[in-house]
Amino acid sequence: MNTNSQKDYPITPIPFTQVRLTDEFWQPRMETNRTVTVPYNLQKCEETGRIDNFAIAAGLMEGKFTGIRFNDSDIFKVIEGAAYTLHTHPDPELDVYLDAIIAKIAAAQEEDGYLFTTRTIAERLGPENLASDAGKTRWSYLKSSHELYNVGHMYEAAVAHYTATGKRNFLDVALKNADLIAATFGPDKLRDVPGHEEIEIGLVKLYRVTGQQKYLDLAKFFVEERGHANGRELGGEYTQDHKPVAEQDEAIGHAVRAGYLYAGIADVAALTGDQALITAIDRIWENVVTKKLYLTGGIGARHQGEAFGDAYELPNATAYNETCAAIANIFWNHRLFLLHGDAKYIDILERTLYNGFLAGIAFNGKEFFYPNPLESDGVYTFNHGTATRQPWFHCSCCPPNVERLIAALPGYVYAQRQDEIYVNLFTSNESTFTIAGSNVSITQATRYPWEGTLKLTITPDAPTAFTLKIRIPGWAQGQPVPGNLYRYVNAETPGIMLTLNGTPVPPEVTQGFATLHRVWQAGDVVTLVLPMPARRVISHPQVTENVGKVALERGPLVYCAEWPDNDRSPFNIVLSDDVLLTTDHRLLGPISDRTTNSITIIQTPPPSTTFIPYYAWSHRGVGEMVVWVKRG
Image 1 (cartoon, helix red, strand yellow):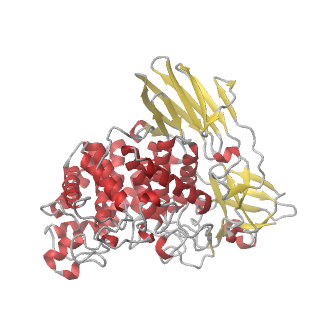
Image 2: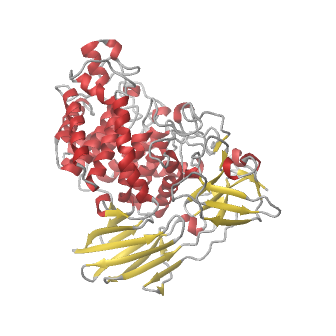
Image 3: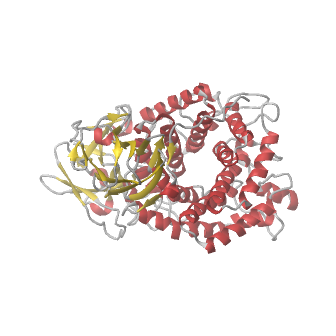
């Protein structure tokens, strides 16, 4: 295979270890994630036998395989998130505990590097221990076995653990397994692909930490082999295995698999310079944002197959919008930004982060949504048997996925390309980076997403010339998302104000970024003011579910009407275009989290109507909720 390992993303994220959040919105969430979600997920992995499966496979304890064939992946994701927290908050007790789990994983690994606990246990104790759809023999049913999906998450976790601790105990397990996979699969070996993509992302991370070309080559093989029937039956649209990746032009099939694939394609394309792959994922992205994206940034319209629907098929009550799919969408859009440098990708990332993703976890850090509908009657048990968040699931991919994203969130705030610094997300923080040989710190102060004022204090060690690029969100420029899938009823956009040391600067916006180039001095202050009126949104007329309906946004947040706040059913609310929208920063009932506020609709004659942030719904009992209300 011909790859050029000197290529890479032209833009590099500033690592999460160099960005310390101090804000009132995300910092408490990160602290809850560290102190509640991480230990809670570890506890649930113990209680449900996920950790014991490794001990049983290793012969360290008696028992039988418990759970689903891909349960191994859940503990890998939990370790990844825990490792991120170790990097920023050293915790000797957690460090020792993770080492104990890793020792069981290492003991469960077979001599040649194979690691799949259900098969190892079945080979030792009998076929009744082989989980459903695992395949009778190694690699015999990759369409559904998740053998490669599991270890892809292990590679990511092992790299995170090695980076956080410097210890190789988990990394060596991952490399031993990856060497087996590399010796087994390839153009002149076994030509098959995983039904659930993820290993592509993990292999690239192994390549980055080791520099071993074979891992990048293998990731490229798994990407390029999709859609080619080289002695095997294609997996079809469900697994994005219906035609070669370079020929695909539509997001199709299982949404999480697709999102992981598109992120993996971006990694491979960036590191190999494969323009055909870049062109393909650009086409697919256009398809999603113009025809298949929910207002919340969620993807995956159908419960059946957890899949994308047809163009403009965006039902509300039956929307699937898996939390894991939102996470995959964030991964994918971040990588597209690193490839192209356009703020439109961060716009989608932000929309997904604050809405489709954040709704997936409760304020308490230990209750979760698997699907995320935009409407609920309080009766339909959409969330795998309930109409509200659950503390865990039989298939519990989402809780540990949420954990690892929140722990890594500071790494999405800034990015750098040579002498350019990108300010992507708005959150109070302190960060450091190196540019032109100088150390530079940026302090960001803001009450975003409640207020649109952003203050950046720049402090280089010595006067330093560089370009500061501050994202001007699409919502602040009169466009909810790129394309015409959604638009504001009132297209007028309040003026954006940008000042440098108190002097107004006309914002020169290129690819969605206001650009300031100068020799920066210690104490320079840039202030950006983004007006945040409440905005009415309507859908493309081909989104039939939303015909005659309107939704509300303010800044990056999508709002919903929920039953406790209104004296009538949310389904009976009618919002006219001419009623006044006012913002009321207040806590709602028993919700104690400081990050909740509401929009109050003042109508003449009364009664008034209240909308709350979509991410905050379903914290006050089970009842009705709607995002899209009737338009009067």
